[in-house]
Figure 1 (cartoon, helix red, strand yellow):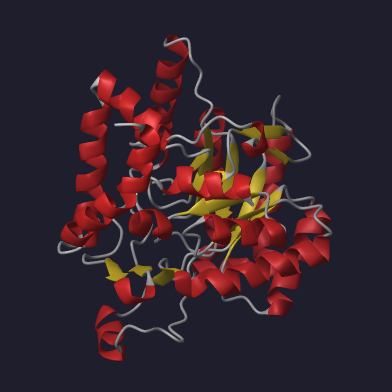
Figure 2 (figure 1 turned 30 degrees about the vertical axis):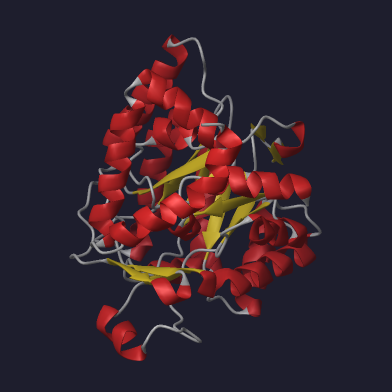
Length: 368
C-alpha cells in the first residue's frame, strides 16, 4: 500500500486499536505496545517498512539546531518524545523508526527504584489527558548508562551513527533528603555524560515528595552550579537544561529566568505535568478516585504556552526553550514554536494520536 494512502488511513486504524487497548490498564498497555513494536522491529523488512511509513520525509525546513554556549545540536526534525515514556532507554531504535527527532530518557535516579504503588497511570479520555504518579521508577543510572553505551556502540558498528538525539533527564531518589539532592544529580550526570547529547534537570515532578521545593532559587542554584562546574571541566561539555512546572506563578517563573540568565543556563523545558484539576470534563467523582498525580495532555496546553511566552519575553530568545504540554498536532506545535520554543515534545499526544503523530506534525509544520 502506498505510504500516503496508508498515512491517511492510519488514524482510523489507530482509533480502532486504541479503543480496544483503552479497555485495559494503561501502564500494562504501554509496555505491551512497545514490546510488540520492539519485536516487529527485530525483523529487518518490517523495520524498514515502519520507517518508510512513519518517519517524516526528509526536508531541510525540518532541521532544527539547538544552539547553546557549549554546542550546536542538529535535530532531523523539531518533534521529540518527552521524558517518562522510555524511562530506561529500552526502545530507542523503535522510537527512531517512528520518526522522533529526539528522545528524552528517564527520569534517571542514582539508585534503581520501583516507584509508587500501582495503579499509578490513569486516562482521562474526555479531556485527552493522563494522570500519572509513577514516582521515578527506573533501573538506576549505572544500568541505564550501560544500556545507552551498548545502543550507541551498536549504531557505530553498523556504520550508521544514529541521528537520533538523546536527552538525559535526571532526578533524585525518593529517600534522598533535599539538602543532599545535588549529590544525586551529580551521580546521574557523571554516569550518563558519555552517552547522552544533553541533560535536563528535573525538579518539577509532583510525584516525588518535596521535589518541587528544589525549584526555589537557592536550591536550584546549588544543583545547577555544581553540574556546570563539572561540565566545564569536560573536553566537550554538554548542554544543561532545566524542566519547570506549569504551576509556578509569574513571579516564580521570573525567578527561574533570572537565575538562568545569571548562571548562563543552556535552556529551559516548559513544562512538566500539573497538579491542577481545574475545568476538567471528567466526572469529579472519578478524579477524586484517581487521587494525586501529575496531569498531562490538553488541560496543560494553555498554561504551558503562557509560560513559554513569558520566558521568551523575559529572555528575548537568548535562552532556548523546549516546549512540552498538550501537543497533539501541527497546530499545537506551531503555537509553541511561534511563542518562542525551539523544539517541542509530545507524550500524552503520542498515546492518543498514535505512531503517525511525528510525521503528521512535521507535515503540518511545513505547510504552516
